[in-house]
Image (cartoon, rainbow, N blue to C red):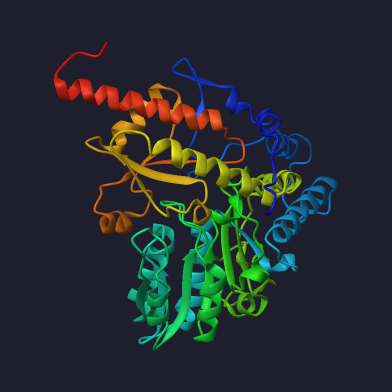
Length: 421
């Protein structure tokens, strides 16, 4: 048996100032990490140091502050590239987030290369950010969107992938891990089959990069999109990895400063990759914070992070299953899911669950989680979602369970017409 790597969670928690807050008189239990993670002091300090000590624009100045900012900005690019296993940092484009990264591919590659009869393959698990851009591309190019179907437990039906890849598949775009169900998808096998069919592969790593040890070379993808804010970094900064030849062939997504080589009144030539895709002043502080977040995660070891979350999730699933009237969605085998648990309580709307849990200091998410078509397949208006990260504890899982018992108690009294005690 392989030993589970361990995290010193209590020491880690001291790095996150917000975890010392009290909400409605109770200690904060933050279980909305799939939406955004909290930030350690190491990231906060790195951003503050940039603004306080060497704030300047990058790539354009010969003075000391600009040179220092440029070095820090490009060092961050190198760190982020290494974090996902990319050997060449020039293949990593800074964007605002995963959504913009996917749209960059949609506009820069798909609109240029797809035509009527071509096929884009996505899955029924996808976030709107990995569905709507392809709907728009299909509308504008005449291509078709096909779907990988799901098993009853919310995993990929791989036979349906093979069917979707037949006759014209040019691009497969799937999530590494589902934000709605926590399903860890077999992206390596998807990439292998897609390439055999002649299709390119984009992996949405918004949930994968923060929680799983990621190596894009082993994964075999052509594009990889992810965000800083879900992995201890700041909001407003993300990245797109692209195969060098593909990035060279693509059109710029935005026009303006820094993405040019030369400009005339009637034409322009483009800067080299990755700057061709980074028009205007970038989020310099965000990139530096992104680099600091990667340093933080590397120091912990991503295998240890993944082991902790899966152990905690298995514990939570078992404890939650004892709550009266609960239905938990997603794979029953917790080795096939990350730290996300979507559930509903019989007779209680997920928004009501979330509000009552907040009164107990427990922060979760409720709604369709930007996966409205998936919710329709599941025949629910939405779910309540608890999502764990490296700083969450077994005691917080217990607090979630106790708070859900309070939800049941509230609605039992409401149903009986008796006043609450």
